[in-house]
Length: 91
Image (cartoon, rainbow, N blue to C red; front, top):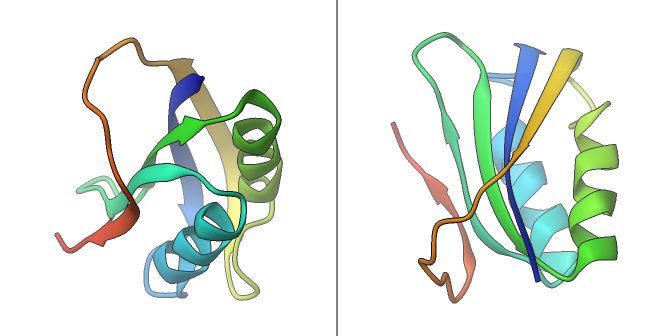
């Protein structure tokens, strides 16, 4: 299992990014969450099979149809919490 924190920077709030990210993650069988950050970025915690997590990271490079992604930062996360689904956290 792979677990990462993905920070997506650009015009990613107010363009449906979180909902599209949730749909993509669910389609890939991932668990975790997506939430807006105060700095106008979006933070995703994704856990699941290695190839599926990598596919979500690749998807984040362009994101939702109305998004304009300028960068994607990824870091491994070694916390041991287990998520049963992939949710949108309202901020």
